[in-house]
Image (cartoon, rainbow over the protein chains, first blue to last red):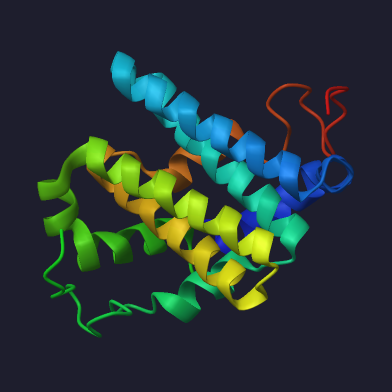
Length: 97
Length: 97
């Protein structure tokens, strides 16, 4: 099991020097292009590519968080701490779709 | 510390009934709109909103992975297992930016 925090740290070790040089705007663009690649993989129904593109989207999200100095684990637990942040229930009872 | 696997399971408990009904295409659209909200937060330089939007992007990515039956933790560790998948080094030594 790998924590969200540890994964983000791994991305930092692997890529932070380049991520910092590239900067927030260009890294956000990369993240968007990875989302498009995930969309394409869904359209093709290519299960292996879908899995790889999920990995890439998550990796670029972690890179972007490193640049923005946001701790992804802290951020998600602050908002989604085993309860829906809107209705405070688990499972969520919100009525929108 | 929360593992990637546990966070995805939390999202499943909270939202899977609705996520499954909404389906892959609409959930992918939600994910894209969350990325746009993150972009807006960056443009405004609103640190609290940036952190919240990171949480939302990650949450919707986990929802989409639940629909696609992809284990995010397994997917990222398969590709990024403490080494760059392209150059097999840590830190990465690839020359692209």
